[in-house]
Length: 179
Ligand SMILES: CC(C)(COP(=O)(O)OP(=O)(O)OC[C@H]1O[C@@H](n2cnc3c(N)ncnc32)[C@H](O)[C@@H]1OP(=O)(O)O)[C@@H](O)C(=O)NCCC(=O)NCCS
Image (cartoon, rainbow, N blue to C red):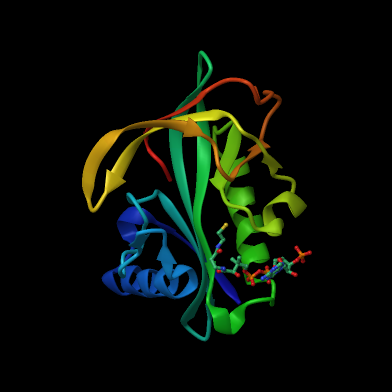
């Protein structure tokens, strides 16, 4: 498998369509929502890690670089999203290889933590820790900005990149949409 890193602004229409098709295939319906061919769930990202075999897209992870506020402190984080492997290539280490590449990229940034929302064992095996901070973010439904949502965190995983400690009791404000 070849791993390619593409900045969001450099994605071609063909890449965008291939990612959208992969995400629709891998995730299907998510609640009342699905990807409907989009290459992102709620909003665009900053960097894509793509796995290709013979020019076919077989795996994907998106990275988003942003500020969040944990308790009273505003911190830079990398959010990982849309981790997907084409079903024909599952169980061959595609997601593992792309996750390791995403972690390597994140560790070269100013981010203090990597965050993701997901429950697959791949994350805890690679050192991500489940946390349950109260979460605050701006809802987006059907391409429209909704209300500010405050709720218990579901599925949040955290990995520290530096010396800073994650405060498990603090509320987490995503300063915008959820990734
Ligand atoms: C989850 C997903 C990305 C895994 O991709 P993959 O390329 O098959 O994963 P890998 O081959 O790298 O396997 C990763 C690990 O998960 C294990 N694994 C793979 N599929 C699994 C499954 N269905 N159930 C439990 N473990 C599984 C592998 O044995 C491997 O274990 P290891 O870390 O001990 O080596 C892929 O199944 C997928 O796209 N699923 C649909 C979308 C999704 O749920 N994304 C994750 C959102 S949290």
